[in-house]
Length: 364
Image 1: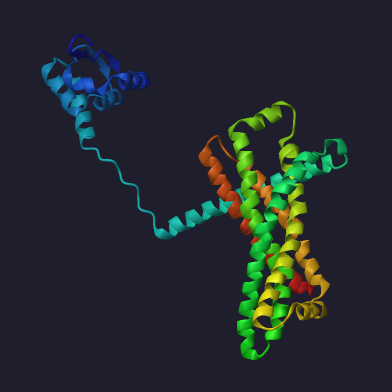
Image 2: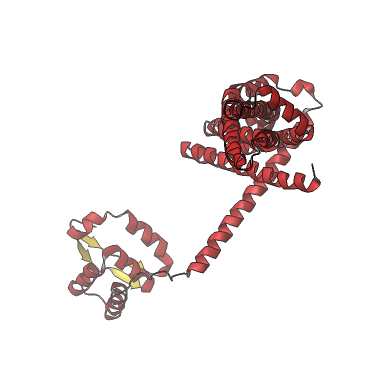
């Protein structure tokens, strides 16, 4: 380029396509309108080179340069032909897919995503169990301080909200049961309804859902923030195992806390039901306890309590796994925190329904 003239020189062929494209991309587009294009030094060209010139200069400016410069006839004919072809070129529209094909492809993507999620969860459960079996025979590697801190966070701090929620749900169940059973003159069986539902299902289910929303999200956010700050890389650099250091104390703390919270939830639910029975049905606490002792077998309490450690293990593992999946941004922390809560609650409800069917078929 000299002054206000842009001189196109050399061969513009396929062999130099990438180099020509690189040079053209570095030239500011704002200056092209002010420059005169000189094609007198243009060497050999082919369709690839001419298409590059058209993309760089535009068809109007290239044709104007052809009219003012002495260009060989065959070169001029080729440039005119490519300009004509490219000026009438339109972007092809993608073919419209039928709705059933879109539905099928989206279903396939969702199924594949679920498969990958289950695969990652199974692998992480295996790593956690392997680390647990390796650590248990070695008491010098037990980490009591993180364990106790996690028990306080997941158990003691959650006691008030679990007790309050199960108390209110117990009162609601008793009120609804009394409303329905009153039509049949069987309001006395409200006691059985409350005791049976809370000992078998509601006590452990409500406590597990509360911990899934409260504690699983905390685990994900904590581990995710450590990953964003590259603290996990520092732990590995020091030769420490993040599973042993971060996951095991939280998993064990959850397996200790959730059975305790389940027991508290059962008692609070029974108290809520007993309160409604005393205020509305004239079934006083002594009679309430006598009916529970007479009609409700201890196996219902054991069935409900037996599900708590399994739910606790899965909630803690899902929360920690989503924390390890976090990428290097605050947005990723929020996305995986939400994902851990949704996955934990879904897993708890799914397993609880399967367990209910299993215990019903077994007659337990």
